[in-house]
Image (cartoon, rainbow, N blue to C red; front, side, top):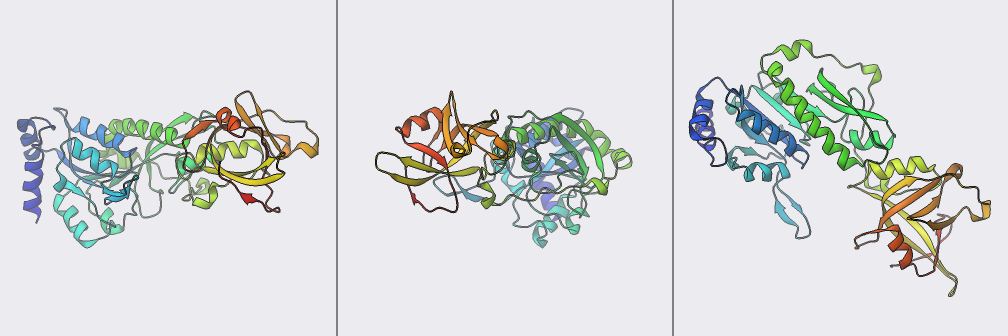
Amino acid sequence: MASSLFFRRFCCLHSATFPSSSSSSSSVFSKKKPLVFLGSPQVSTTVLDALFNASFAADAAFEVAAIVTQPPSRRDRGRKMMPSPVAQYALDKGFSSDLILTPEKAGEDKFLSTLKALQPELCITAAYGNILPTKFLNIPALGTVNIHPSLLPLYRGAAPVQRALQDGVKETGVSLAFTVRALDAGPVIAFEKFEVDEQIKAPDLLALLFLEGSKLLIRELPSILDGSAEKKAQPQDESKATNAPKIAPDEAWLSFDQEAYVLHNKVRAFAGWPGTRAKVVVADDKSGCHNILEFKIITTRVGINYSSQETQADEICFVKDALVFPCEGRTTLEVLEVQLPGKKVVSAGAFWNGMQGKRLKKFDETKHFSHVSV
């Protein structure tokens, strides 16, 4: 089994879009260390690209021997079975499909047997999306290193960027850490800090952190490969550890009985998926009808505090370029973009014009209205 995989790796590295056959041939029979990359979503391709580029250098100390990613899944409107973004990226680069492994779970015996046959010196993970069991972690000689988009031990878990934005942090970062069985608790090799813009959304911040994380990885790889990183890596302070649990779809709803900055941070944090949703009451003074309208809130900013009388505190108005929602503590949330069900994202101005003079009020859970489609 080991010899057949070795031969496959040798043959597959002769891909037309990879370096010339002479450099590939010498890499297989030289002292280049085999590295296995694990990642799945689009942001992970940034890290894989950096590894590919570094491995093609004449003096590279490693080669990407295999890629592990999530199995194909149904995506997009056609619901066709499609490879993960990482798998598709690797295929587009000419990486052999034989060396792209897609186990349902990383603890499967067949997968672990295949991984052992590859004899990896090091595994690199970047948003892989599967728990790595001890049997996996025991295989790579130099261990497994993870790129985690937070300043560990802060925000350990599945949604570090989203939870950090939800908390309104002013500073975050990316950490390079050895993987242990405890979640995101391994010794930290290196980290980089970044200030957080008050308008940046989770997808953009996540992309930025993985881009910087890929640079950090390439910078630290020599010390990881020669074993010195293990000696310099610092254990995490468990007393400062915080969790970043996976986001549930029902967290998407906004409640305007919270202060505006809390809602603004939630909109930024949940951008992309699951998004943030709100209900408003549409009042038609001509017909006397009051209906509920549901939509996604896409982009916001924190407005100025209002001083209206309490009787007007539920009224939603349009000022300049924003729908202005009164919130707790006399704060206001300015909504700049919205999306109605099944429709494209539109500006607050376009949405307001579509109301054709109807009034908007905050939704009160204690009252019952009919739903309306606009």
